[in-house]
Structures are given as C-alpha cells and as structure tokens.
Length: 302
Picture (cartoon, rainbow, N blue to C red):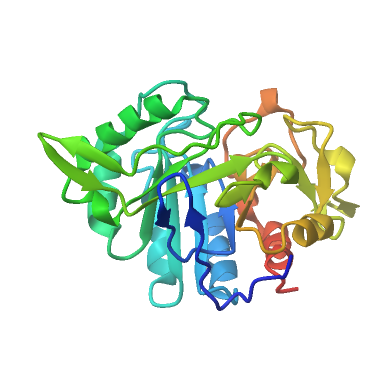
C-alpha cells in the first residue's frame, strides 16, 4: 500500500453510514492512564508531538479508569493548549473500560471538557474502550451522550466505536439520534480496532493496545536494552519490533500503545507484572526521555 504523505488529509468512506469521515491523523498515542501522568511526562509528550511532520495528531485516554485524579482532563487540556496553533489534536475519550452494555461514566466532567475545548481540538468520544457491546447498545450509549451534551452540541463531536477485535460485526452505530422528536447528528462515526495488525482491516483507526511493540534501541534501565522478552502483555504470542510495526502500519491511521504509558514500569525503569502496578508516574518515567525517543522513531523523526 502506498504510504500517505503526512501533510495530506485522508478522506475515508464510512459505508455503514453512507457518509465521509473527516481528514484525520496518520499517527497517534494511546495512553489509557494519561490522566495519571505527572507534568514532566505530559511536557515530554507535547515536545515530541510539536516536532512531528503530521498536521494532526491523536491522543487517546480513559479518564474514568483508576481516576483518583480530581481533574482527570488536566493533562489532555495541557496537551491541546501546548499544541494550539501548531497541530490539530484529535482528543479521544473512552468513557468506560471494557464494559458491556449502554452505560457511560463521567459525563459531567466530559461535558465540561467538551464545552471548553470543542473549538480548540477535535473531540472524539467512545462509550468504552473495546466496548464488547452490540450496535443497539452503543446506539443507546450514543443517545445518552447526546442527551447529556445537548442535541445542538453534538454536531462537533465524532463518535467512535472500539469493539472486540475478534468480533466480525463491522456495523457502526447510527450517526443520528432523536431527542424529544428532533433529530441530531454526530459529526461522523468511526470504527477503531485493537490487537494484532491483521485486525486493522475494515477500521478507520488501529491501535496495538495489548500487543507489545518493543524498541531494541531503547535503554530500559542501566545498560539494558528493550527486548521482546521484557514484557508479557495480554497477548503474549504477538510482539512487534518498532521497525516492523512502522513498516506494517504504513498508510494505516495508527495509535501506538506502550506499557509505560499505562504505568507498567517501576521507578527504576523496569517493566512490572500487571499485578504489581502502582499507577505512579515515578518522577516522569511514564513517558520519560527514552520513551520520547521511541515515539520519535515511531513518527520517523530519528
């Protein structure tokens, strides 16, 4: 597949709705626990994103997961403000985490964020990360979101579904919702898929979420370099080197997930087992200098 020129906006057809998706970023970052990062990590990410050639970048997170932070949108606001006038930010918010059904969490805080930033960034909302729900259930969740924001506001909001990657049902929820007899439409509806690269087929955007992408050039701690054996993810059988991952996702809208983004590293920089997570930023190790280099290589900057 021919590689997209990063300065060109990509137009994708959404067959399920008979509409066109908007031009969207070619690369992005998926950090489910972004709201738990310290200011150093957030600043490091902003510095990398400023230097990309892409006119648009995507940053996605789940503010209601382990959300002890009083203001779970603070880091996302800082990222948008830090890139204002330089990049178009696609700010993706997962309101729930691996939930089944039509429940959505934290709508009051999301409404405040959307109201303040809908003209500064492209806000994208997904009822939940890897929703494992039927289309009809997602339609109910979409209507709940629209009711909370107000039907007149959702025209600036993109709705996204991120289903189980093994689910063959590629149908998207309805773009239009009915409120008190009036119809309102989301800006567009997108499909996001996770897992192994082969699961990207049929999606508007793909993330390796749960599948380890390792970078042999990264210094994990001391003189130890990152290897495939350093981390055991949900899918222990599939691991990609960064160079392979970049090559195989060329031309695919891709958000990179890394274990450090979800606090899977201790304060010495070593990867932790899932049962040992402390959800601590460890003085910036969630997204430290070495992680910044990895992301630069992902964007083709190094």
